[in-house]
Length: 196
Image (cartoon, rainbow, N blue to C red):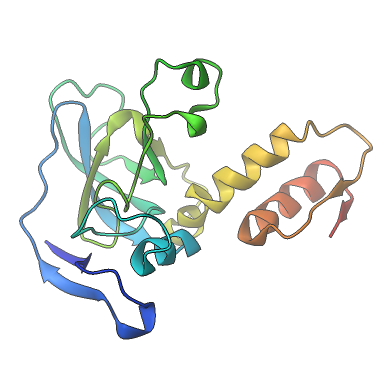
């Protein structure tokens, strides 16, 4: 497969990603492999590439807003099917057992692992991910519309839900980038008034 590989941390303007031919990744037990159709770019990808986050794995294939079609499955996969369109987000693994995982706050799990940071991401033709962290993509979204929802969409929607929106109350949003863009659309549809 062809992939954009980061071998050394460097400023993005020095073009540190290199187009590389790599062996096709094979799914392990509990994993699915995607033939990638789209991978959006997030500011966090730049943090990985430029070293703003502590170095975890090099070389690495960045990219964590991945949309593709399942083309291979590891042993034990039951939820997804070959040919099904799915997405992969930043959060790709948690322990599933700690107090945070048990209370729906797996983003705080001490055993969390991230796509394009701890494991290869979506700037490639193929990627593997645990079946439990592959999200089914509804038919109503094109690949390019769905990809940003796998980061900004998840972050924005979670923040919106945690704000405990009440009927008739205005929603104020301060400095929240692309996640705010998603929240504004949801809030205007549901609440009717947004203060920026």
